[in-house]
Every structure is written in structure tokens, then in C-alpha cells.
Length: 123
Image (cartoon, rainbow, N blue to C red; front, side, top):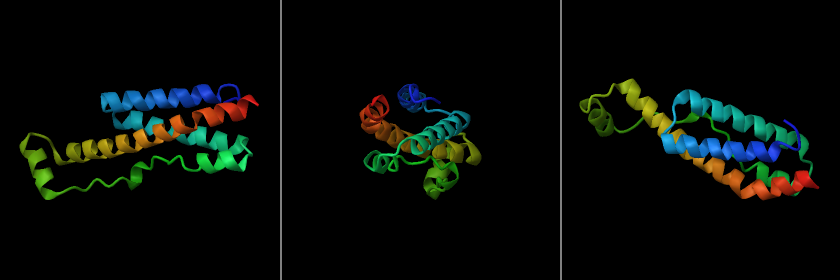
């Protein structure tokens, strides 16, 4: 990633987030998004030395798929099973829904900080 392309990468990450949210995504796509988010954040941390800007970048969350809670209420699980789904498919769908909520938050943070990032790298 270069300094000239970082703003394009941030915009691309936001577009990926919107597509994932719109299409309800799948785990491989969500995992790829998570990795991309970490790569962009690492680049920003390595290349920004302004404490004011870094304070905001630190607020961009990571998407930790292992930390997403896949447990749910017994009633919800039973309804999922009755409607023809398996327990593992239900848990994966629940995990995807929680991940998509976090992806929306990540995208919103980048959208809020995009102008700040653009201005930092254009100076």
C-alpha cells in the first residue's frame, strides 16, 4: 500500500462493507474483510505520526470473529430447527449477523475519519 492509494483503500473497504451488509455476506468474505481492515489499520499506524489523527484511528475496531458469541436462546434455536435448519447452520448465520453489525460500525468509523486521513496524506 502506498501513501497515494490509502484513501482509495479506505473507500474500497467501505464499499466492501456496504456490499457485505447488502448481500448478508458469508464467512469467507467476512474473514477477508477482517484481514483487509487489519492491513489498513496497520498501514495507518505505521505511517501516521500525528497523535491527534492516531487517537481517532485507534477507535476503529477490529473484527474478531472468534470473540463473537454464537450462543442464543433455546427458543430461537428450536424455532430455527423447526423451520428446517441445522443447529450449526443456525449458529453460523447468527455469527454472520453479529459480524455484519460490527462491519457496519467499522465502515462508519472509516467514513467519519476518511477526510482526516485524506488530508493527512495529501499534506
